[in-house]
Length: 374
Image (tube, rainbow, N blue to C red):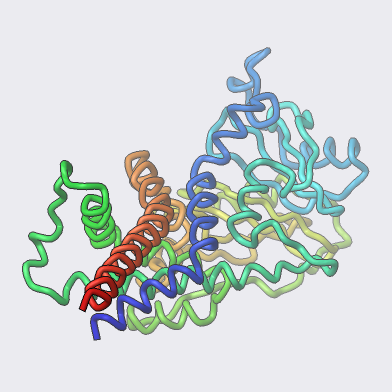
């Protein structure tokens, strides 16, 4: 049985190796992609302080939207606020272009397609290997999820191979002065066991973005609960009155006063509300919502995900867990090391296999020579 698990472990590594290496490298870059692009082109991603705009208040939402639409002649659909006061905001237009804007002055710092940025490029590499067909679909996306699933199976097989013999804990010891083949074999096994659980969870949370229904069912089964979702499907009824965007924004924000605004979804039609996606103090990311009538300013509905069920909290935590943005920078550094580990496992696994093949060939040659002498 052990021999068959070892062979399956090898075959799966050979079949998925290139995908896993790609996921590993792009995933590591994605952890710091936003920081890298801000460092390379700070004039697009950071707000300059000449004169110091950080001492000023943000422009009223209505004025910010008006300035953008006058300059671009395009309707603003979404505005994403930055979590740091010296970072630019992003706006998405009706023509699917993005703008980096100064929220203090309304100045447009950069107009771009999302996947033309460094962060967007790395994300498309990580999720679908940069390939988009003529219909605009990304067929490689499912294969990246399949590779993640294979990685989970690989880890389970590897842990089984570690558990099978005796003296398991002793075999976690690494002899740094051993020969290369022995050293790499020990590192391969030891790091595989140490990184097994976080790697499985990182791979699984990555799969949730492709196979949402299936992975959600697994989370619900494990946590014995249901994921709560709330959307406002009603229509506004005062569309003949004057647009009161600032009043609606302030009321919607005040309805979840302890939260911070993450994204602003402006009405696409006269019958749609203003929607705020918000992050509550109990949340790792913005999953709470507040809806308001943009004509009367009336708050229509709210959803505080910070007070949702345990199952919902676990499900919502998957994004921040996947990218290592929780607790602080030490976790992110650790996630970088863990993200790089599949590259090490693939290459050391293939190296050790080739070494075994070479040893077997030498043994076969010696046996043939012995038989010839007889």
